[in-house]
Length: 208
Image (cartoon, rainbow, N blue to C red; front, side):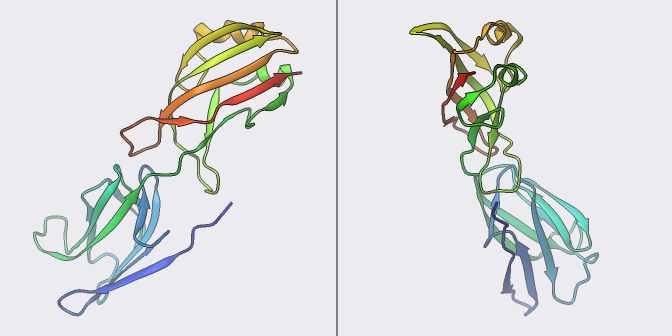
């Protein structure tokens, strides 16, 4: 897993004070994710200024440490003010908000291949894995198809809504036997901050 490097961005404002923001990546935050940042203003203590934004929420953790959670992809303005009611700002910094990469679908934390029948039947549904990030992918599953193939025949083909296998489709899982092939396909959903649905990879399992 790759760790996120810390980078300090510094710029001057009109009164020659310096404002610094420590972020995970160069002026980039990810939508729907709690991005840790550290903010500093020259000649100001951490309790002597307020930080706010027009895109999402900023939660102060300790001293000058904040967690920034943007809501939408695009541009976010980070405002530095003397107080929450202050009209004038000490400074403003623009940050790009990007969507998280498309995750990979998993079943039993597997991307396919052989799976024991007991392990298969013990699962609740699909999960999404965001590879390369030490975070959980909060992927909102919309729907996917479950196909059960026995021999050369398609025994079942149903649409499932959400990440968990619906109660109405549980009978399909219960009827699976050793030697069956299971295909999860047409997996759709969204990562935080996106308007359009994303299609994830299909999963093919052989029951043993």
